[in-house]
Image (cartoon, rainbow over all chains, first blue to last red; front, side):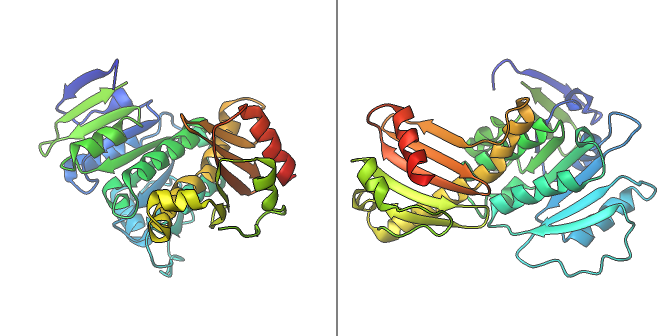
Length: 205
Length: 128
């Protein structure tokens, strides 16, 4: 990464990447300090609010919705929970508010995941520039497809979302092979590293 | 390996005839499927046999089908661009051409010889 700016902060304030369209977060979403960073990356720029797409390899669509609603009980942000799983979505979703939607896609079909994101972006009833996407995690994606294909996926989906002025961030475990992380970070506009104490290290192009 | 396309309507033998030598792979795909319709013996030998080619094919499959997502980005980025019809990669030794028609696509890998434009014109003429 050339011409990069680098800064450290101790308060999990990631405002510096607020306008950046594609971000690699070097930490799994479930770690507590990371959750705050993740929430900040999903924050709206304006009072008009956002539409949020949460893509998870770990949780079912309903589990993802439950986690979001527990943290944001009063939020009416349109939320799409996309679970990457080998099973079809069969959970009871009719008890959820209208602004919460569910979908699944197969883990071994990155094109299908990309098409699904495309479809969700068109379906969400918000301006595309207000859409924020969180994908957790690239570690799981790498269990199904090779590095080059993951690289192409994150380039392709980031380009598509960027063209629609939407934003995405991807989580990856920083303890992975450095070469893989270096390859993938080169596809994105900024890297946010979150330590266990919440220290955030930010690099932007 | 040579077989008729199922997503497209053309005679695959015309590729061998009209493009002369150097044709390596012709395959068809959409968002759900990927299918070879021609693979040269040289390519299969080069990768170490049919089993090896099959694992290589799976990687090509994953990589290429993502075109169906990628091609939409340009419509949004470039005003009045319209849908992408063709992706061309001119590598040192081969031309890799992906041709889109509706929701379907065609992939052609061919050794480089002659002008890129002529090769594309020939492929478009065969597939029209």
